[in-house]
Amino acid sequence: MIPMRPDGIATRIVLAALAVVAVALAILAIGVMRVGADAFAALMVAAGDSAEHASEMFASSVAGVFVIATIVAGLAAIALGSLLARRIARPIERLAEAAQRTAEGDLRATTPVEGPAEVRALANAFNVMVDRLAEQDAVRREFVVNASHELRTPLTNLQGYLEALRDGVLPPDPSTFDSLREEVDRLTRLAASLDLLAGADDERPMPEDLDLGALVRSAVELTGPSFARRSIGVETAIAPAIIVHARADELAQVASNLLQNAIRYTPAGGEVRVAVERGATDAVVRVSNSGSEIPAEDLPRVWERFFRVERSRDRASGGAGIGLAIVKRLVEEAGGRVGATSEAGVTTFWFSLPS
Image (cartoon, rainbow, N blue to C red; front, side):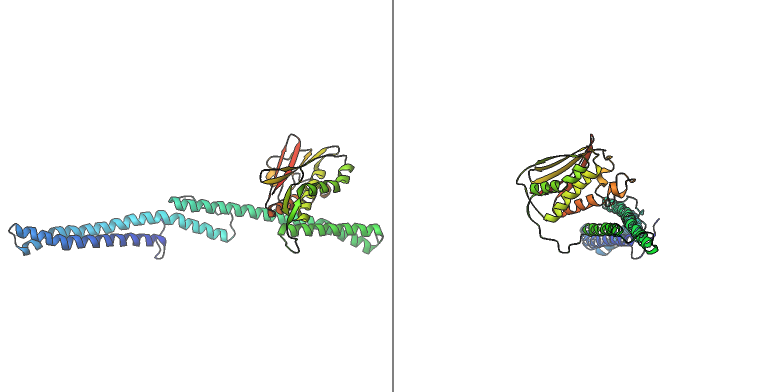
């Protein structure tokens, strides 16, 4: 049983119940002890009794019963108020304890769902919040681990090259410096991608009206040599004159990232289909590729930073795992949506923008 603190909600509910009973009894006392006494005396006098005897009879009978009823009502108010107060205060105090544990870093501190409907709704909302915090903490930890891994590899390579140059193992020729430059470029690209994911707004151009079909067609042409090197067939179905309001460079990056993703995961000799369609209120771009399907449980996670469907894929075949995360961020900032399907040997990534 939870003790009632002087400043607690249980004590306040009991005091409120007593206050209500006191006000009700005061009103009843005025009616009974004043008005009722006068009426009783008048009736007794009319019946031939004296006023003094009538007052004595009223005081010995009605007034005595009223005092006893007042005591019983007060005790009942305390009992019922305490029961109700504890029923409300217990889940609230448990919720407060769980909130304190959460504030101290315990993200498993859920609270029982009990009490009145409003308190149960509050407990449910708190438990959902704790679950979301735990999920976000897991994502944050995974992001830190993956980001550290992505940075460690080029830094290790740079360290190895520099030590080899220092010790004379490698000659300081152009090919060695080209390799060093590749690793530096990789770090630069990763830093730029992380800036985008973090929402860096430095020197971003203003959105403008763009021909979505022309932009996607240009992106397909730029990646044409990459498709050709792997003998990947490309089919396009691009509707004309679809205008969207977005940043040209960022939308070009979205298209490029989706196409690069298709190149990376389409087997040699496979097929890629690029479509730009006009919807009722939006425009939809779909990039489909043949190849291995993505498991259904992994589809919602393909947009997460550093997530790879096959954890064993290396950087050459699997990328850094942030291209689709960038796509999602840029599209949603432009007011659009993203999605993915994978079935019957065809995987499709799509995004839509208001048009």
